[in-house]
Picture 1 (cartoon, helix red, strand yellow):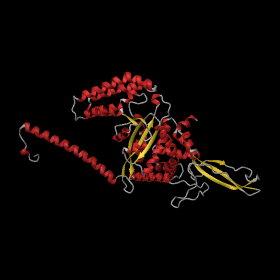
Picture 2 (cartoon, one colour; picture 1 turned 180 degrees about the vertical axis):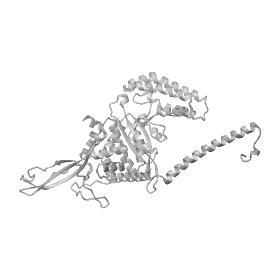
Picture 3 (cartoon, helix red, strand yellow; picture 1 turned 30 degrees about the vertical axis):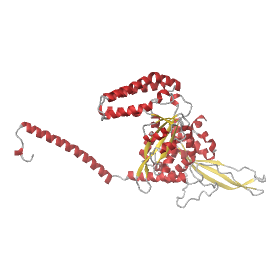
Picture 4 (spheres, rainbow, N blue to C red; picture 1 turned 90 degrees about the vertical axis):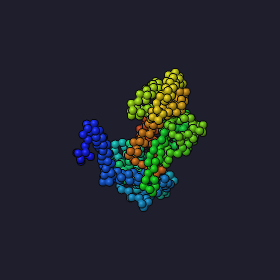
Length: 503
């Protein structure tokens, strides 16, 4: 039409209509061009861009698989086995750098023979070097054990090597704790830690660090089980889960697995129990998973509306408590998108409930119930009635109507908090426990296997529980790893982080 000026209309109205039509078409084409340009840029980056991210993913896959293999590897029972002996497929150890300071300890068998009482003579020394990490620097602990023999009966004597976290291994407990905290608290994958150590002149391969992590978490598993028992003794717990990617063996692809968190925190109602977070890993999100995790739990559970929890509620042992934060979030999203006055009013009414919670925080359960019955219950009841009324005035197919129906359904499950002072208005305690996972998966991208996921759950359990109790996880894990190998399993509770804080 534009190529033939003679065909253009002469009437002003027709010309205006043609211009408007062309303007609309041009605008539509401009949007389409911008969209296609964006897609083309993405395809070019994928086709010709850097492959460093793919290489990082490969390193992370190997890292997690090595952790899993190490955790499952049985420990040697021969305490006097040749330390230089190693499987043929493992690299030979390099000597520890000479520039590192040495702390020398001599373990003597004594001066007299335990068999005949004769004097001992020195035949030589056995020296074991252990790489240790003191916050801010590396040191080498030299453990010297003189080999001695009796001058009378020639009986051989030598002090036993003290127990260490990894039998015949080089790392000290402080170094193991440093690696664990770096990976699971500070979200630094092992290949990055290896690069950092290299800059300090320490040659520690990623596979070596993975072996240490796997063996450390296997050693610490009884302590994570003790945290679980503590969590399940509570009257109420907070539950949540989050997706993590897990590599499917043999396919090179990932599928969605889950990390579950169960938290006991009685601080809001001045409870005496120490706070703790227990994590579990599963390869799927089936309802049987939480049912297995909470088989020994009886009480109230703060959670979202996940249908997989329903079988747990049907047992009669667990009572559901819904989350006001989830209800509020839907109204916030609608208000941001549409500027809805109804959504804004709902948010304000919910804010008054949180105002009461701020007042009762730290008070006894009985006092909290009295205040809630006097102040929160009228607000709660009025909110329900008001939401029912709004639902009749708006389109039933609108997002706002969906948010109101969700709120009314969940508020029925939230009413127990009004009658029990040890319950909370929301499940934010569990959601906070998921933040380290969310930060971590941006760095490690996916789990390499189920065993690797289990190791991560153990590490998260111990580190996050220490943080909840105001305990430095690295200092606590250093002391714990130094003694747990010799600690009696029936006294494992003595190593829990709040016991460390007390001593």
